[in-house]
Image (cartoon, rainbow, N blue to C red; front, top):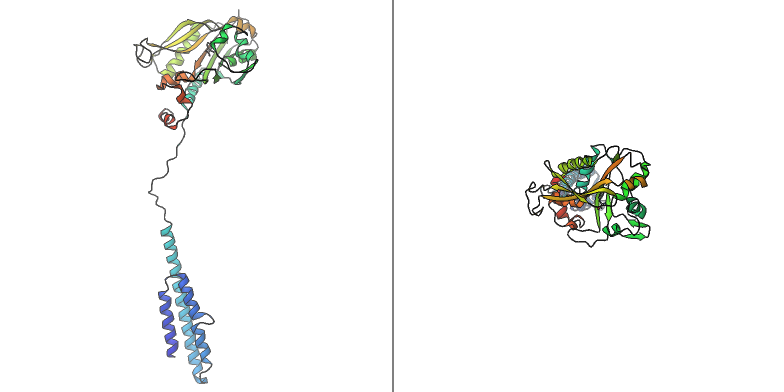
Length: 344
Ligand code: DAH
């Protein structure tokens, strides 16, 4: 009987001292398995006198019960501790600073293009598109620049074959739209897009850049309409108070042709380093659509007239945002692009 008590108290102590589920399993093996100490007590019972067996057997059973219960209790405790330890180990410090995600912004050239599109859409213009790989016919011939015409030298061209080229100006789309209209007026549209020239890249030149073409054809369209339209655009893009000035120029597809200056938005026309003291900055080319261009495209130039203009998006963006090197637009340096965050 003393031995049973000794085994029981030894087992209960071992259970309490087991510090892990593995250690507890070892204790279970020592005392409760078929070859364990408690089973050994049962075996011993066989050699006892008959009258002692019931009391002995009962005591061994109680011992087995107590040890089993204690084991289960300790097992639950240890399992709980194991979870707590694991949670401690895998804890996430939500106060640590995270990785900053770089979120893109609208490209400055896109901002200008969208601004121009919005203001012309607001005046009832449509937006037209056309191919960048263009036929010589639309880029030059329909624009009144026949083969071998000296005006072709104004725009150094990337030819793909003698009749196919990368468009040198959005005026190619103007010609496509005029042809498509089949002499029907009114026409009111803008054509934004990329254009290409065989220029050496430097701070103010790029072999690829963006333009937006404007075209209005109808009855009684005059140079005054052109002037009012461009003045409206200049005020929207560069801020209220801008004035417009026309200087005579030459483009084969317009007659008369003008270069358009805007009063300098930096000094309000007084003269500064940006406008080189003149108070004016050249922003685009424009004119009245040449009667010959209208006729070639099936319009009666006695009955209708039109104006057109072509504005360089990079030039406007450089002026508006004070950028001095056109190459900044194309190198995709995030430090440059990020500076436009607040304009978006
Ligand atoms: N196509 C001209 C250029 O790229 C710009 C231009 C001038 C377009 C006069 C026009 C215009 O529509 O009427 O230099």
